Amino acid sequence: MNPLVMAMAVVPLVAACAPATAGGGPAAGGAIPSAGDPRPVESTAQSPVESPVETATGRSPATGGAPTAKRAPKPKVPRGTTAGYVVFDRTTGKVTVQREAHRRFRSASVVKILIAIDLLESRETVTRGDRALLSGMLRASDDDAATIFWRRGGERRIIQRMVKRAGLKDTLPPPADKPGFWGYTSISASDIATTYRYLLERAEPRVSSLILGHLRKAAKCGADGFDQSFGIPSAVPRPFAVKQGWSGFGTVPPVRCVSGTAGAPAGGVPLGGDASSIVPAAAPAAGLGPIVVPDLGRPVLHTTGLAGKQERLIMVLLTAHPSGTSWRESVRRTTSLAGQIYRAGSPPSR
Image (cartoon, rainbow, N blue to C red; front, side, top):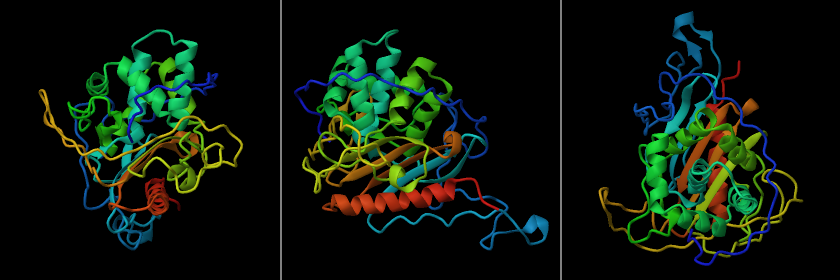
């Protein structure tokens, strides 16, 4: 994902945003701490969180073997794919499933959420032109809009401000010698889940409603022609609000996307895109030590957002695939895994 140097003109769009849903219960147990909470998330890198009263047979020892609520099988990460994921239940205030939650991935376009928050919280009003740019950047990952806001906000300083403001633990700015490469920001599944909680629980309504309103209306296509309806939009039932990210697949999609709204029939307007490239670089950053961009040389595909009835779940899946893996195969793997994670992380059925 290589931010474009030249900013292209963006067609003004009128933002039509639905109000943000109120946050869930307080964090508890294995929950992701509330935004700004210094407590770390305990990572279960080897296996997802499971109910302490469930056994492999789905029966409870506390009730003498009586059937308990059934949970979906443990998600299976495809061989060669690296995945970090978290599902947070806003009703119970707990993490329901996670794996490699603190493992860093290069952000690709997921960083655009942080760019948008920083922009909106730095000013009381937003011009019509900036609203159009935000619409393109959030709904269909317009790289040109992101580059404009990135430069205006001080590039790496955007990430430094958001780390402090939202209480992010794993997020790092791009290397000092690649300050314009916003897609080289390092993120984790835990930090992106915390970012969504920040929007839902702590951000001003004018900020959260604008950003989440656009994510609820994510476009199916980017201007670069890539189809961004992989992962949550293809594997999870509506309603959902999503921000996708991809990098390392070149600039020309194998099959050009037909415009529409993510997860819905064609008919919408493609806005912007998510161009990508591989640039080998990692240099020391003042005060942070050497920053190594995660998984350079490997394509990454990320799907993040809110899912479930009343947007009950915060769901984050970050993936890196073997070098040379095609777009089609990466999409297949990521979408299949997203479906498994959603089922494993959803409230158990009885």
